[in-house]
Amino acid sequence: MSATEPDILVVGGGPSGSIAAFDLAQKGYDVLLIDRVRHPRQTVGESLLPSIWRYLDHMGVSDAIERDGYVKKAGGVVCWGETISEISFRDFAYDRPGLHVERDTFDLLLLNAARGAGVKVREGVRAERFVEPADGGRGEVVLVEEDGVRSSVFPRVLVDASGQAGFLARLRDWRRLDPDFRFVSLWGYFAGSRYVGAGGVVRAFEEIASHPPMTFVSKLEGWGWSWHIPMRRLTSVGVNVPVELYREAVARHRSVEDYFLATCADTCYLRDLLSGATLANGEVRAIRDYSYATERIAGPGFFIVGDAAAFVDPIFSLGVVLAAYSGRLAAWAIDRTLRSPSQAERNRDLYARQMRGRYQLARAMALPSDKAEATADARTWFDFFSDSEKDLMWSAASMTTRSANVVRAADSEAVMTLKRQDLHALHFL
Amino acid sequence: MDRFDEIVLEWIKTVPSAQNMAGLNARSDLIGDGVLDSLAVLDLVSFLEGRFCLSLPVEEFVPENFRSVAAIADLARRLGGSAS
Ligand SMILES: Cc1cc2nc3c(=O)[nH]c(=O)nc-3n(C[C@H](O)[C@H](O)[C@H](O)COP(=O)(O)OP(=O)(O)OC[C@H]3O[C@@H](n4cnc5c(N)ncnc54)[C@H](O)[C@@H]3O)c2cc1C
Image (cartoon, rainbow over all chains, first blue to last red; front, side, top):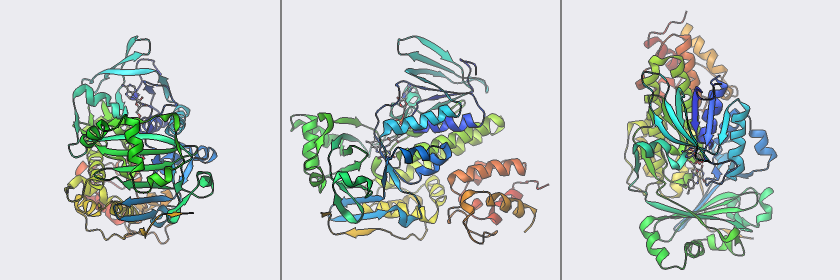
């Protein structure tokens, strides 16, 4: 490939970027992928739905996932006010489990699969500027190396997979924060936490290889919720709280760490799971304003994928599978367009509508009840789901009292079956 | 079953998730039963556009048009596709 004129430039080596790059390289294009950091790199988002296997199989990494022993999760348990309920993936026609993955090594596995397909990867290189192509020609992207040296590449198509950093959205001022989701997430990694297994049975961390865990979600006092995601060595624990509440509360504590640990200790069952566990390195991480949409996600010579396009709320672990889907959809649209430029407009439109529909449904699942509105895109999107996928969305949403929202947003008459077990309490052995 | 139905049915049979679907026919619910998911539909559109020399307008990218082999064949005919 020409060093400065690849067919495709992908900005970002997270799941969305690696998958888009993989597909396009497989279809025979010259693909250059850059990331401003070097992988493996830390990032949040560790609980994956079983639909992730579709993408792992496609990239040929499923054996490696098995070999490396990533934790398999059987479903989810939610403690929401007075109700504790459980769903198991096998009730929804999935023959494989979900996963709890350390994202540093997981993302590297995907990036290496892209390399294996012929993608050229350059790390420690940041995208700084983009000039849209004129008349179906090449665009220009200005890159900055770690030592500050600038250079330009001229791809036919730019895939912006820059995650929360939102390379293009920030450059063009296209990002719109979601007024209903002004949240802060705080999280840390614990050693020696007990975990929730099937049937709401609480187990010692050492049992994780023999008894698959559930992702455990708990409603916080007031507004907000927590996650508990046991992985191979450590357990990821996070709390999501509204920005205002966070500001007030932190002021009452000695430090952010102090506030985080106090919130964990105040939360239904989380305190019990964490009793005797230690916060690794005493370190608490934070991210705020991670809920937004982007005014334009496709245009002449560019597609925005994954979190760079939109993100709502991590409550249903949709982030990575959505990112993966958007990567494949964009790769499809780009390939169709390069083969037949007269379809460019149609392909962009199709991409944008699909992504809008998914975003609106994800938003309806996370919104407090009665706020969701029906939209045509959400409906189209919802009706592409299989019967068991619909059952899963509906049952999962019901655990946090959001099922009416899903039906309203999708404007759906589908007959769905609630497949969840109500637990009266967690059982400590 | 005309030529359109046959061509579409042959293609559907190559989808991995169709392999364990007993009694697959022109009326089987491909979406509800999970044979065609959102990714398989993309491959199908590529196939239809190439095989029948047609172009699918974005408004036609709705689940009703992909629900069964019969619906897909109707779509191809309606868009002026050629089965030769
Ligand atoms: C608090 C929280 C909890 C979450 N929990 C879950 C969960 O449990 N399950 C789940 O599925 N999802 C979860 N998510 C969502 C999930 O993390 C994301 O959806 C997913 O990581 C998106 O992948 P991506 O490829 O789009 O971006 P990322 O994985 O963020 O990758 C983006 C990459 O782009 C690079 N980059 C950025 N800017 C530039 C630039 N200018 N030039 C070059 N490179 C650049 C970055 O270095 C990075 O490596 C959570 C999100 C949040 C905020």
